Length: 186
Image (spheres, rainbow, N blue to C red):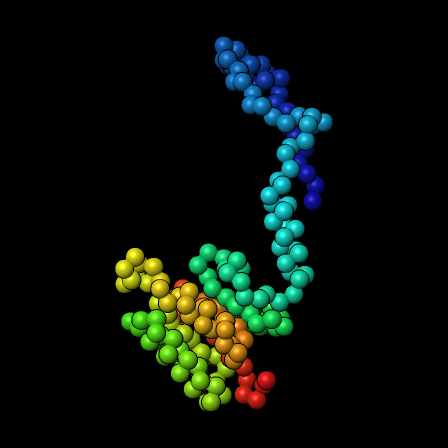
């Protein structure tokens, strides 16, 4: 496609324009970077972020560490598993086969309920379950008490391969999707 050519004003129109703006005071031009002048500052933090993201993508699977949490989202991936497992879990590759709701339980009750639930799931050969721990809205300081505990308990269980925050329509930050070992896998 051809670029349109710039048309200049006829001389009589240009003279008319100059006459109309004769008494106008020109505005100061803002400071601009001149070609050939000093280069603009480098976005160092952006470059470091890109470098870190690239390095992380090459290092392999994610292991559990509180430092890998981003904001409020919890996730865990057992050593030796590829990131695609976590991606599939987040995207709903496995259907949620059972749910346990720990709302209203104290720590000891919740731990016992969770252990009993996971044991039953293993016996039945379930692969994907949802654990509802709540958002802590009714807690004394409106902070989730069970959220961190459930994360720790699940990460220590041999049968748990991965977990991540549930989608909004399944509890969001108040629930986790948990992937369990397949029956017969060591």
